[in-house]
Image 1 (cartoon, rainbow, N blue to C red):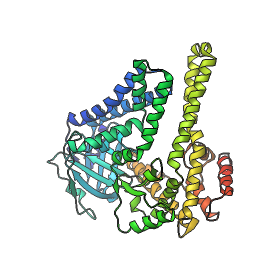
Image 2 (cartoon, one colour):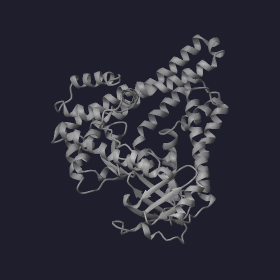
Image 3 (cartoon, rainbow, N blue to C red):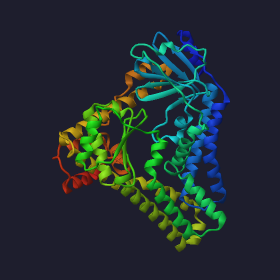
Image 4 (cartoon, rainbow, N blue to C red):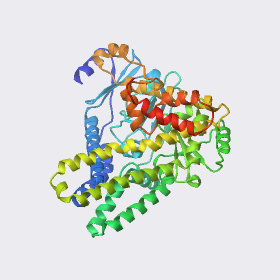
Length: 492
């Protein structure tokens, strides 16, 4: 790190002094502490179950995240290299170079929005959080990443306002404990504990164990709690992901056309801020469903957005969110039932072979995505092909929509990966960089992983299937996916 800083200074880079204080770290400690306390209480008093392993993984992830935050607070240095027109972020963990030509938007917040930046409060990949104080925060939108940092108030940041970045917006952000943020804070905490993790279920199990409530009553309450969470999932996610309704006059007619053709007249379309290109459906049934697009997705050509909306409209129409949750719950239930039956049948053997029990549970948890992909991939393929029937261009338009989405995703990922640099070998590394393309057929091992473990089939296959079949949904397409799932998973 010292060598990198010395080289930057030799090249004439100007250091940007950062505002640093412990208050920023305390906010992360407070949020993390809530979930860590739940995990510790469960480890001490809760029953032995698969939740133990999930909590252990979450506990380790939180600890690693906090360690990184402490290291970042102490080590982060920021430099502006005028001759390169690039911003350098140097820390113990990494060095990143952000060319200002990739900067698309600059805004300033009165303080960091910690409810947006905390890792468990985000559904997508976390933002690049370089905030080291609770002071004025600069938000920089680069291709593939949104960077947040807190320079000293006396530092000049005018170098960011060049070229097309001629206007800087400033937004007021109230403290997370402000009364106007209470609903948002509660929604995000609830989201982290029930949707993104199992903290709420662990807390219930621990409480019921301490109260001496039997396993049958505990199981019944857990199931009812899960149903309740599924029922209110649309409202929780709207709050947790800071969604707002799309009001773009150019997009509203497209939305109306797609969803009226699908026979869905009361589905709201929202946008949530993220540097990723993505869209998703939420809700337990048609009457409580919504579709959300990320802010980056709205930058795609309208023809591509129309295809994405058609795909999500089919998920809503077919109740895929509800069915997927029910099937996932059934799978987990079968796993627990199997573990219980084995425990009842071979109690002595299990007691003396704990290492096999541990490895067996980890194997089951590892294989769950493989079982889930059997139905999630089928739903995705069906949404592609039935969604195509809602489009004027049919399969060709849907294939083109997925192609455009994929190209933008790959370009953003390529840019994001490119921001990480090896300072000594930067030029050589740039020459060796391979273009990222999800539309190309990969080696058999990666095809195997995608077809057997991922919720979506590989993008190259989805586009090819649309381009080589007619615009409809039929048994023949199910067979095509099923055969490809195994044929494409084999060595060439």
